Image (cartoon, rainbow, N blue to C red):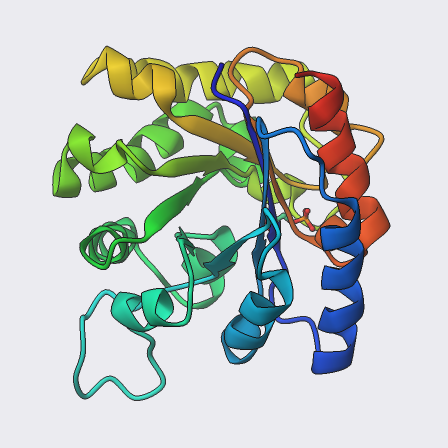
Length: 253
Ligand code: PGA
């Protein structure tokens, strides 16, 4: 049993007041089931304060990005060691918004993944195709390129404590979700690619689905054998919505 991880990617949303209310709701309703882990990834300025709000609860803390460098003259960047310092266990790397808007290439994403591991963080590697790539039959080739860039940089052992999130770009923030069949097909493909390097790592790793996950579609997605939870954007900003997704996972345990 791999269990489920339900991770909230708050993106560039929040304030002290809004975070307090959101976290109080999440902590108050967090499932007691140890097979369903909850994670919140607030924007950088709020990581410390959210860390205090979740203290003593099973909710875990992560960041949305990390520098590929460990320290030095990189104005505006944040090192993995700093994220550990403020209590993060996880960090999202290679989110499609960073790839598309901030120009992060697969090679930069691989360096960030490596930097996260060096700092003792668990990377959540996001991969996913655009609508155009899906419609032209390139989905698996795109996923292979994004995943292989990281595998080549850190080796399969680097995935021992990592998480992968399959996030079709066309499903992010659009209200259009991949069907459970579409998602399962890609998740299976990802696990098989890892299996070709190490069956043990492939069996153990959690592969999350992300892209318009909501309380009413989560169970349909999570009931598939290779879908181990979700990376949630919009629905992670309201505790009831986020908890409904966690409950869907709990109902499958
Ligand atoms: P969404 O975002 O749930 O709002 O589609 C998911 C993500 O970008 O991680």
